[in-house]
Length: 403
Ligand SMILES: [Zn+2]
Image (tube, rainbow, N blue to C red):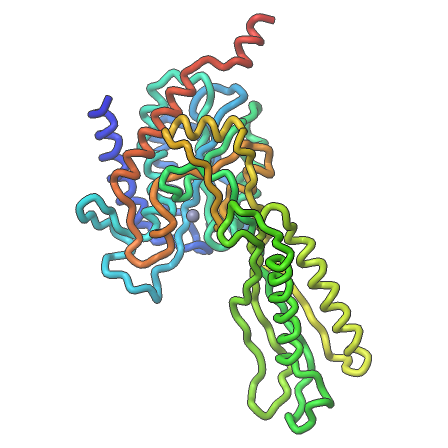
């Protein structure tokens, strides 16, 4: 058994080497890496589905291994990575470098290590007489706002007659079970006004000045969460955060600015709805517009969502998936993380979902990102346990046979 596991780890590293060489950043066409993956599925005689974007230059992939019965597990990950530009890399970003137990390259932890494990274990899944199905669901454009997740999930729900019950998202958690994530939402607010000479400052509204009031409102909103101790202690920090990432405005020191825009994000704990925060911000903006627009007709404020709102994750610690995943990994802890992933979408779609994968977010998105071979080995053992679980009889089926 151990030798067999070693072989699987070797084949994982060889697949990971190939996956790292596809330098596909979130937002770019991912057809080359997707075709590499479908090549492996074809070699293993697995029927799969492609979910294309409207421009036909990106695609998600999903497939089922095992019987057409309810109660299976979806293993999911994304194929895109974040850029390496402007980071002090000392190793090549897009070719795998092994030094001792560490494998370096962009995406080793986040999250091609998990994809490589899933692809390397396929022959084992195929050899096993699975009684519950195992699905693979791989997306693109996760790193730029989970743009493909909803369509991938729609396709998963429509292509199979049976209903998968569980989902494991293999983001790097050092193989620990994560049942809760903050949500995330990204906005751009633009203040419009009309330009004037700076000596005539009250003849127009400075878009920059107005933007500072709006920024102050957002920061005060976060302070309010802290003052009211609106805390969910599972997270660090334990409250919803609001953050201003960029601000741009004005054209010259002696011109009243006619435009100012800023980008901001919300990372919300499950009990705070992004929609409520946005709603009260919009109400404040409307008040400002109403106060000024009569005298200054060009004055306006517009806020738009940059991507769709990424839902948080809040799977009960008593749910079946938490018990199962802990039994597969041998870990007992249940964790919360402050980053958002595709897990919230899977949960919203009705699957019991947790995040659990090899590698660590301490390395993800950083220079000289790496994964330890030991993490890949733990993930392979984890996937072998999933195959063992799938071999066992399905209670639903037994009851059905009795009838
Ligand atoms: Zn990721």
